[in-house]
Amino acid sequence: MDIKQQLEIAQQILADTPLPAMPTEVLELQALFASTEFPDFGEVARIIGRNTVLSGELLKLANDPRFVGKRAQPVQNIRAAVDRLGSTQLQNLVVGLAFKSVVKNMAFETLIEHSFDVARVACELSTYIVEVRPDKAYLAGLFHNSGAIMLASRFAKYEKIFFNTLTNYYSGVHKEELIFRVNHGVFGLLVAKKWNLDADICQLVMMHHQKDLHSIENDKVRLLVALIQLANGIVSEVSFGSYIGTEIKEMMMNAQEVLMIESSVINEVRKSVIINSLIAQI
Image 1 (tube, rainbow, N blue to C red):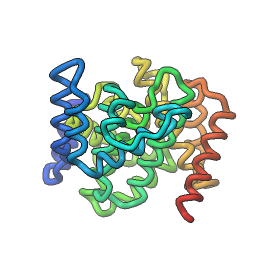
Image 2: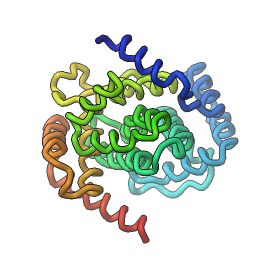
Image 3: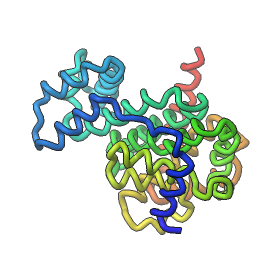
């Protein structure tokens, strides 16, 4: 079955379920960035400032060492945040944060939190990978389970199916395909296309459960898939512990090989996830 047929099936299943809509501010920003190579950052800041949730979240990221380095002095307003992040990072982060705000109540809490956690871990891992920018990794993490979010909003019993795809990373999506004829990556592709994401992010969304990473011909997509898989594995380790099973371990090993990342780095990121999880519970 080719991708066009798969998308048609996904569209039929979601016929009565609207895809998450892009906020007006993001549409305006995309039009502005598309119209000129050097947009007026004052206008960019003004548009973002109209959305209090978006501007608050963006200000936090403009002070996050993963995006701006450890020695950057804090910024306290949106114009300064826009200037610091720059055009390329800003476009990805604005879209990611907007999506995050739109979908936060669309599905069961564990699915939403898992997606947000994977985005944060992927972002942290990317600081050790020259070929993947943190803003791209963050965007990929936020959108990778967008199809699962759509299925959860459509079917009340999807929660059990989703958990199976987490603990059985390869076989779980095959069972999902028996139920829906396509897996949640295809549903996510519908969302990614509606949000005008780059082709490599769209492919990542569709292929993030791919078992044979070396079969992915595009180098950028292969790295993104491996990054999201490794981030998923780390989050699952912290969440499920000894229940992660052999498929997660195999997935992490394959992803680590593609990313050429040291085990010591993975251990550091894992410790960071555990610490942040403990802090969140206080």
